[in-house]
Length: 122
Length: 122
Image 1: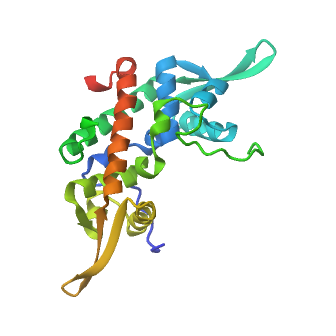
Image 2: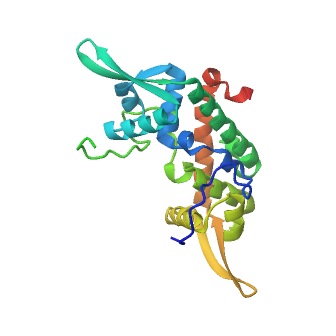
Image 3: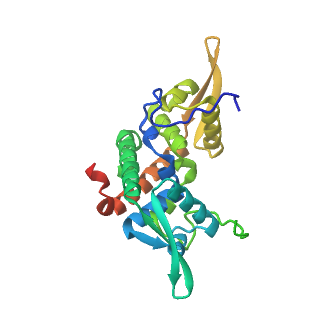
């Protein structure tokens, strides 16, 4: 620790200008990006499906769903399928926009790195 | 907490099959991705430059450089520029490969989402 107050590294910071600053950590974080990606394809998905397709534990999935719900990017609803309790997650319009921004930022970063790193040549 | 041991969500997990599982968190994390991207372009960069271009605090940059160095993706060296102490970071060959894998994984995720989310149309 330096003892200084921590300056949040947001895209708004005047000092930084790199495309990586355009990445929003709520969406960029790997597990949450996976959840949003699945929901963007499926519109809604239940807890068990998300857990399996993304290879997550109950606790891990629950924690990330909560962060996404708090940010208004998904909605979570609980109900029953027969007698079994089920939890569904659905991506919101804001969630779709956030995912689109994330992909556009990654695209910008890729274009910038294309010549130096040869990402497309794989 | 569920009381279960936490299963790490690695690409190796048989249950999961989504492209987001191909993302390596050491490289994917926003700040570290930014550092690697800058170093891939510049080959080496000093601490002050990295801090400014990525809009980071000393503590934040130092912590992420350590994680990247521990993973063998960068090397950090200390020296003097005139009388002033300076710290340089350089990307390793493994670091370049890791960045290339990250970009390929994001590319795969984008291609999969392209039709449903319209990322390229922005």
